[in-house]
Length: 175
Image (cartoon, rainbow, N blue to C red):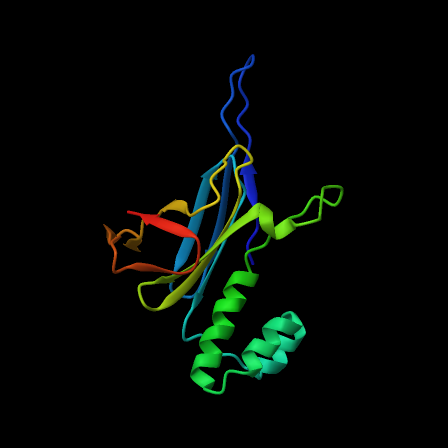
């Protein structure tokens, strides 16, 4: 489960930097870290072939909205249903903390959501709080760096157009 984190810089006088926000997620074979300046971020990664011990629809009825359960129910192909379930689950694990005293009229409009396929084997979901100073309603740039790392043995940048694909959300990948 994602945990939103923030670092506020402490400087003298009136000089300051925007807060550094970050989040981290992992599966058995991948670690993802998201970092932003000034905007909260949540990230989650899941293996596409993750197997579930429970029946997918029973699990979905417990955690998903009625609309999401209905969508999954209408998918006849079990493998396709499984993939759509994993995508939804990945998006749901992006934890968003809401101020209990804030304006709750349209919380989802305050966030950008991006769903990615990574290396053909994982899904990654990223949610980034919209910058209140930005008038841009279109896609958001995501600077993505993918590294293959084996501690003390290998560290190689493998980013490129064939390593990540946007499959949902408005985003432009930068490498």
